[in-house]
Length: 445
Image (cartoon, rainbow, N blue to C red; front, side):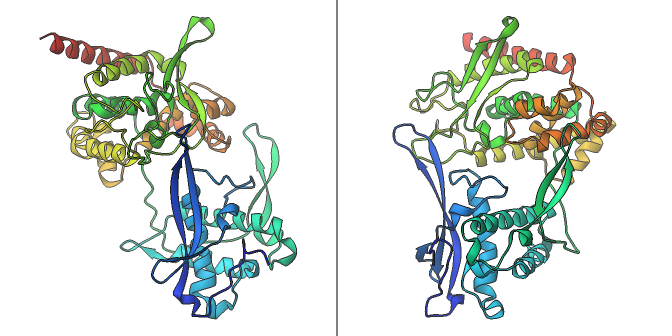
């Protein structure tokens, strides 16, 4: 039998072993490109690897073929390992199987039900979004295994996926395939990360960042004006980078100069090879035209700050820490959280605007994520009437599903948010110019 998908238990008890994921970010010497390598190992009770299963070659969460170097592969492998450990290790006496090929629908259903009801952290269950992602990963991964080993498996395709009629962003009917499983917990405690941010609050947040967190002001603008994800922000390089300019200003039609951000490859941006963050979709991202002026002013302000700071010239990252090395995703989250908790929330609660006061109460109870900036960017594009296909381009999405959902909910978004017009962008322009002027006056003195 194929050792890629079979596990023959050692002579000792199967409970002495478990499946785990080993993650290795590897840098190609010539290109400095980062490859994300995740391997599924079988380890003993002392965490010593016994064998590499090669199961990672099948792990995916859609009908598309697995991408072994995806930055999200590690998390997917964790989901699949959870199912393997549950069926083959923890419940070995119950199911009596020792091969991935012998897993059937009922075993998978048992795992998903228990996974949904499992208690984590203090008294909380996993959120529904996490549970359903686990269901998708395990289901589509077993489908990939089935496509190669159909004649030797207990499963059939109809055990895993069922057709469902849906409507695409143009309202046309189409058939999609969804997991043929249920995973309903009775006591889900769903506390999703909060993404909403009103226009007035966004203005206040960036204003406070200029004063209290200048190192991430331009990072916030990359999200609010170009729709970058937080981890993608950390991958941006300076124009002078030997690895190639991270931001360029290109002349487009109608003599408009467009800033564009190079996110085509994940590169090593630190001499210690620490991974700074992932790029979900490789692309060259442009700034939405209505935000170009505000974006450019803040960018020039940020460049002037970098001129007085030391950084690793071999990489020239756009965002650096106190040691001159590229800022990591974790560092960005920490600085954002500090800005929100120490300055943003108190400013909201002390505001004379009752709407801002109420918003301050909300995010005091619910964690605000930097993803809120990308969400705000998306909402503004929807309010400006962009189509789902256009939104997919400006957001840098791999598929149109998320964009179509936003466009379909335009009516609700209109109720919750107002369009960021000239007043807001002009506010950022004036604020950026003011900071540049202050910095220039200080350097002269």
